[in-house]
Length: 88
Image 1 (spheres, rainbow, N blue to C red):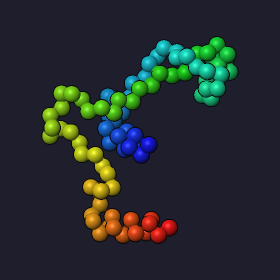
Image 2: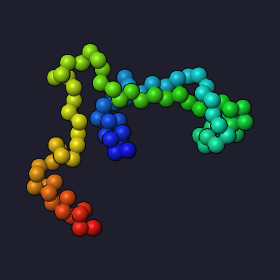
Image 3: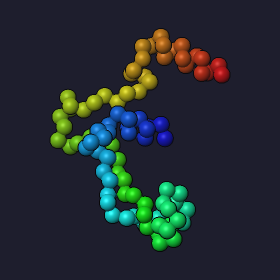
């Protein structure tokens, strides 16, 4: 699950990569964000797509490095924090 959030946080350009469809999408009676009328009719959910893929036309130098604990912080800080969490 962490990897999904990591990709979303480092690969999405909000203007280009979050796509919202205008057509009503089928909803279930248990969909909390749809009003009561929409739940009864089975419509009203929003179609939202988050594109976390790297565009095919990007060159290797254009690709952003993924931010991860292992490549973001210096060794001594990583070791200290790992020791703290291992002893909790």
